[in-house]
Image (cartoon, rainbow, N blue to C red):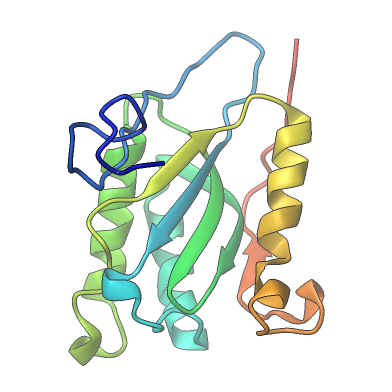
Length: 166
């Protein structure tokens, strides 16, 4: 897609930032959002034990949304999350945990850590959740970082988020 297409996921012609749609909440239907966050200038600084520990602590502290599954790659991360407090927007939550992680970052010379924006998609069906997780989980293998997805040490699950459909 042309980044200058004002009808696409961009706010205005020439912008390279996605529009973040409000999370759609329906009775008896799970809300699970797939998020991708990149490092500033795609610096390969995330896939390290100390960096991942900082992220996990930030997500635990920023508990207005719950992280279920995640994969941390060298220059970006993917996670599946759900609102615990619907009054807190996804954008506000991500800004909060990015700030927490940045303040606790083990190597200050790597600042700034994050790109300003992120990508998000609210999942609508359990099948799309399963397919998206499988794709993300295999990302380290596609990038030549692991022979098997189970060998990648920077992936895991924090909170149970079950899919419920009416």
